[in-house]
Length: 492
Image 1 (cartoon, rainbow, N blue to C red):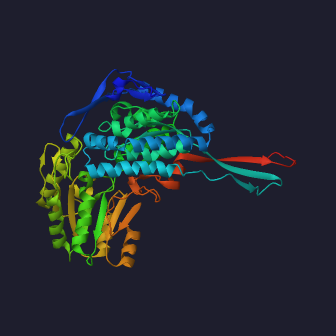
Image 2: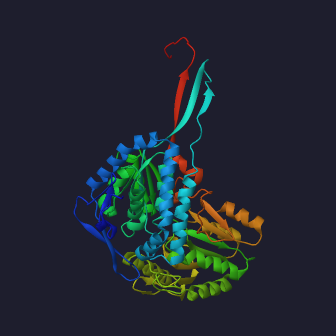
Image 3: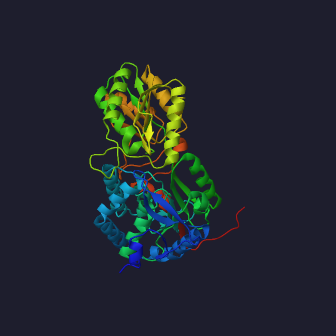
């Protein structure tokens, strides 16, 4: 029997701390709106720094027993979590649509990837203990073991709230860590409270999973800079990520950061233009462009430039815009007014700077039209910034060398794409792009559990997925054992 009351089954108005559903110390709540209908989905707690303290203290107290439980028992419990997740799949897909403006296809894919996060985590095992001989002393052995870091703080974003929480939560739990989650204020249910409900239903030990909801301006610094966690997993903008890294560093916690992107899509002269433009449309317009790994700039060879722009416009204008809860809709709203206003400002400024508005550029409510801008350059507003929306500036270049120069002319380096029929040449170009992930003859909105996910330059630190995430979740420990007596002299 869940500790949750039937009243809470219909609401999301309480925090989850130390295995209990509790009201915030502030007594205040934050409304969560459906961005398509502007109706209130729920009222969630506005946590305070005291609530963050309580959550971290609960996680800290629970961690030694969770670690001592052993991997086999942890796998059993996390496996039960996955089973409950699968049983509630339709429920969380619906929440992703209503809370975050996800289309049904995107919501279904995100929920599936989140389940894969757990399936992959269940296979994780730290390296076995390694024993080495001392290089200096006879009869001395070095034992290298890997232990969980302890407590992991997870600060997740609103665009893929479920997956971008579970990709840190699942491996952290299996590897023996306890977790405190602070989801984004726009998506606090799918980013945290729903996962807490699953944890509660399956009976994870008290304090192993804790969720605090609240505004970043109120509790973000305390989440990132608290003295208890050893790792802070953050996904979001580079500007906020720098602050998170600074706060984490002040407490000597490891910041695991996936930050902003300005993804280039390099299109060479030898492509099938129709296919390349279709790939480009998916890369720019999936989830209304609100994806850190989306195509932010289309860098197209002059020989195919005009045709590429025409085909990209056709794809943009073919999208069915509307409430994603309705069947047949493949393009929904952006998440909030601030996002909409920033996007429209980027478009207006880019046109003023000399770009041509081929299609889109307007908004009704939070529905920003799929937008294509031709005659763009790399220094225009929609090109040089991570606009994070359905805006596709198309930049003309005269050579692949120029294309690579333009692609790399950014402080970001998260994801990129190269469209080129000559696969040997395509691979050469991919190797020259300064990004943590480059996809040839495909769009860059890719995330698979058997490949490292992360960026270079100002796009982040560390990697997620598979064995790569263990660098953030476990740490090596050196135990030396002197097996034979030896003479000791003071070091000189």
